[in-house]
Image 1: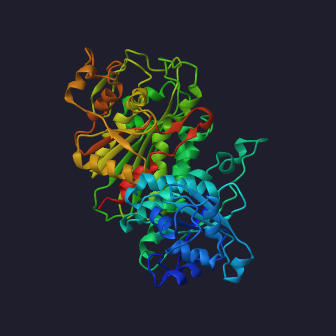
Image 2: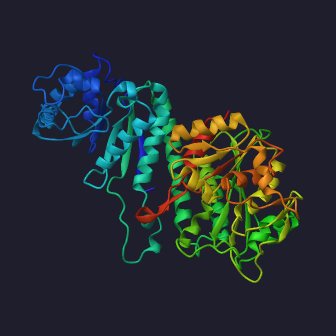
Length: 531
């Protein structure tokens, strides 16, 4: 990453302790950073004297004001110090600071608003405001005092991971990470390069672990973004396989790649029916992270890896077809999540499975009306070749039975219908296992990479009936995302399973076009909570 993260512990630093307040601020201010970042609440402003008040009263802002030679009072008089949530106030060093032993060049004060309304969503707004203030200017490094933000100590880990998630997202530049993709209009790295998370003895252990986890998650997100953003003539199924193999050297993941002959030998007729229209060979990638005990059942992540989707014979419209390079974002998120698991040395057994190919029209391509046989033995009438994701996933979902998994989650940019239903806010969640639904929903809230549950009622299966095969691959326009999930559920009867439809959340269109890296944060938080 172009931004680095680290921790520094100030053992006795406590801004809530009257006895330790002065020494705590002195130790933080004596650290020679470009900027010290502190958060304050509405109550802190009230104690100080309120907006534009001449006379200060008490509290940490009053003590900070004394150490900074009246800088806080001056900002207050100018109206720069606000009690509103996400307000930003930058204090810059003058000669009086040095006289007090202050080595920080700036102090960035971030308003938390009313402490009683504090939650992860409000915290995220404060973090974004703070990171924006640090970015793009002369500030290269900052000391971020975590306890000043934590209204609830149990949220420290989630808040730190979320801060790193947003900082990494802000620092991401495709052209910096992939410089060969641009010749003249070169991207420039953000000038802000290092964020140090400061804590005290009370939160030291939790803070260090959260930073390690957050960095791993951000690295996984960046990898997922890179893979999604790369052009389809570069990011082919073979490229995905080589990327996965490269991770075995970096973080010790075990990677196996199956080619066309091995896929044929497994009887994956449904997967191969999608691949047969392309000259580019399909790949079936298996990635193993063995962090738990040898006998522990693994969590299996299955990612859809269509590296370019024309729709096949059921050809898509030409407009925005370039965005169909993002049809492998499910695969990218699985690779990114396994990379994160390896980096943080997660104490769980996790397996990633990726069926990957192109969906192209040609004389060899599958036709609407063709019937193919899946690895499970079920026959499928292909009524629309643009409903190809489920055809490659169903064979992968059958393949993973051999692992006797604790749970299986498939991730796919599966249906435009999910975008119509949920827009670009939530990923669609489908599962009949209540524990899995609760765990994924909780992980989504913790990372603000949220999901929304959609139905899997048996009645929807009626739309998938075929007169000529066991099942049709589409069920018509009504409830398209639901019938797609119902199709997949037919291949998951031997284990706990959930399906994430990320068609609306995996990438952005328009001026901000690019991969979002979702749902890597959701999946990493989910894995961290598994016991």
